[in-house]
Amino acid sequence: MRSLKRRPPLQASSNEPRSRRLTLIRWLYLTSVLALAIWLGNFLFGDRLFLGSEGLVLGEPAIIAAEFPVTVRDVLVREGETVEAGQAAAIVSSQAVAETIARLSSDVAARVIRRSELLIRSQVIDAMIPLAENRQKVASNTRRELETLLERRYLGLSQHTAALDDEYHGVQDFETLKAEKRTVEGELGMLGTALAEAQTAIAELRRIYDDGRLTVPVDGVVTRLAANKGSVVRSGEPIIELSGRQRFVLAYVPTGSLYSVNEGDEVSIKTGLQAKRGIVTRVEPFAAALPREFQRAFTPVERQQVIRIEFLPGELPPPLFAKVWVSAPAILPRRFNQIAEKWNSLVQRLP
Image 1: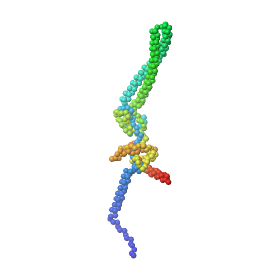
Image 2: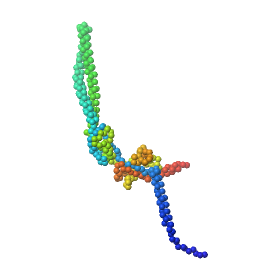
Image 3: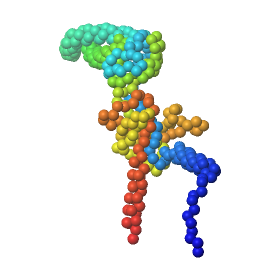
Image 4: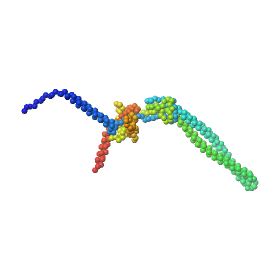
């Protein structure tokens, strides 16, 4: 037998570079298809598998409004300005308040005059009651004496009738004064109560109006000027809108997902290339409509459950109304662990 000889390698064919290019293109195509499938799966079902939702950075909302129709004379703050509680924010004037104060002051003056008249009448009655009582007693004694003389035939009937008439008028005047005394005292009591209430109302109205100064209720940032100088604003309508200094994130999570969000969960809050740490402080028991910038095109208005997230100490919050991305991939494994624990407990209970 002839020994097999090792043949020298043949030179590469001219088609080999082309086949390598085809293989590379094939792998790139498969990788692109796989990446697209992963992206579509995450876009359609990612929020059901792990926590990843959008949110807004907010502050505790507050408004500056008047309790009565006003005309804005001057606005002392600007949008974006940091303000403190008690700081003057706007100067307003109100014709309704001026008219109300004038009317209440007129009522108070009328009640004071009436009260003075009643006090004078009360003093007169107090002075007349002893005299009326003495007159009534004298008339009664006179009538008794005249009746004695009448029995003895020493007195005419006309004199006895005059004595009865005097006694009747004496009793009538005495009882009338006593009744008038009670009426005056009751009216003085009611008038005193009404006068005190009117004076309290004027003082409270002056305190609320504060010469047209509207002050800031909380420390925060001016987010919107709802009225300008010269605007006429109805009662209750906001003039200035504020956000408190303490910032938080309101995020929206879908219901019926494989994970569960609980108070105390630590999450990551991303805005651009920056990431902040936060903690879920409240899971609200209601679903709200997503903000307009979160709504998807060509879909009905979407509602998701609201959660509140506070920034951990030392973290610098993003600007107000910044759009952020909230994520916590560790929540899904914890959900699987909970399912496994429930399964193990169920298996242990089986005979």
